[in-house]
Image 1: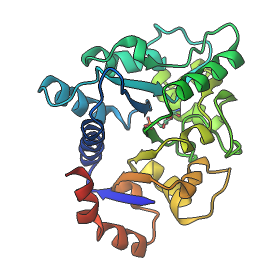
Image 2: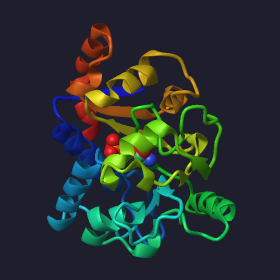
Image 3: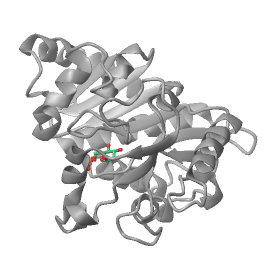
Image 4: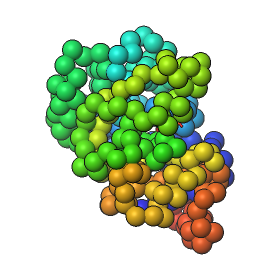
Length: 267
Ligand SMILES: N[C@@H]1[C@@H](O)[C@H](O)[C@@H](COP(=O)(O)O)O[C@@H]1O
């Protein structure tokens, strides 16, 4: 595992976007060779999306031959709802870049058969040749996508009922009215993300500090599903200084000392 410690949330966004750009450019995608990217929503990745849009607008990066797969979506929230992850992705990213919308895969939380929808999503990831780079965020309870505490670490895409902590955390997007937050979501499983060649998890702010400690300094545990990535051969956590508040000084010193090595990954 790599832990890249940046000073600020803005530096996390810059680092993550530079890494995505490098991976896509190094891959040299084309009509017979699509780069596959797993994507998150939430407030954490917004800066990264803004930077990627800037790369596109400056002619430094194209998404023409990129296929994306989003991690999750609420159940029973219309696509046009401003808090649906469909809306988020088109509003904050896809509408501003040259991706073909048919290559932007999102789970449909309004599908008549939700189980079939989840199976079809797994199938389309397989048909695309798997995911090269899966980017994720975490909840304060250490969930990845919507894999709430207690989710199987071997889980695949499925319907999940949200934990109260997630409903509380996400109510800020629904006018602080918890009753308006959907209670279920479709989510990729922990194993779906584990299958990706590289996993990059963005963690910013003090509210995620305890989850980061559980993720990297304690054992693998299904109550903190992001800890599963200790077993991934190429997992990165890109974090800001605030997110390290619950880590041991020794851990922080060691990984800060590796920053120059990590920087080479962007060159
Ligand atoms: N399902 C999403 C997660 O995929 C995301 O990582 C998390 C954190 O969001 P934020 O970045 O806004 O803290 O929110 C939701 O629960």
